[in-house]
Image (tube, rainbow, N blue to C red; front, side, top):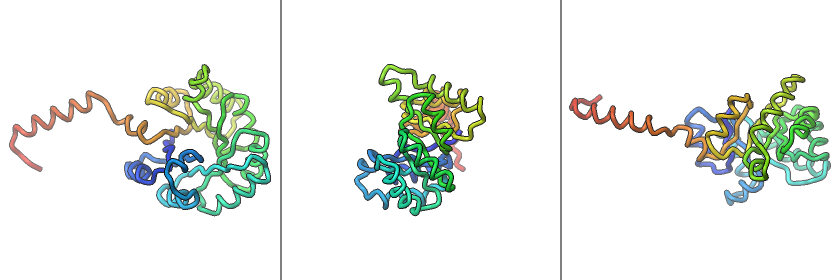
Length: 216
């Protein structure tokens, strides 16, 4: 499973990239606004830190506008992945861009039928939103499982990019189902390291080592 971080905060991206765990980055207009920085500038900086796909989202809603914005965004770096919404115009844009060799992440997916359409349009990634789906009374993990079955049935190459992951259990369930990618906020990725028995083990080892009076 690939790990993407869902943020536009440069310090967090650098910290996670240093662990060797980071395979890509996802951003959206809300995350860019939260960073308080220029969209083009921050996207370029992220692309210089991470070798893998960096999702940059268009804000136009019509096909012509999306294509115009995508043309600007994909000039930032070779690893920019254009992010489009799961709409008719979004999928028209997806088809046009992927046919030209550009990576596309189709976002705001909330049904397996939508995911099927995105795969048929040639999407590089489909982003089903687990947590947001749960918030509205649906089963986000079941959505991931349904998409996995459909994609495997027809050997679609579109990668399932599980998004809106709120906690480690979400990640565990996605990994067991076989999601290709998980994008998570920095705090969720860092929480994966935590276990009370690991902390207690380190504490015990250090206490025993101190008793020896030795140093390395």
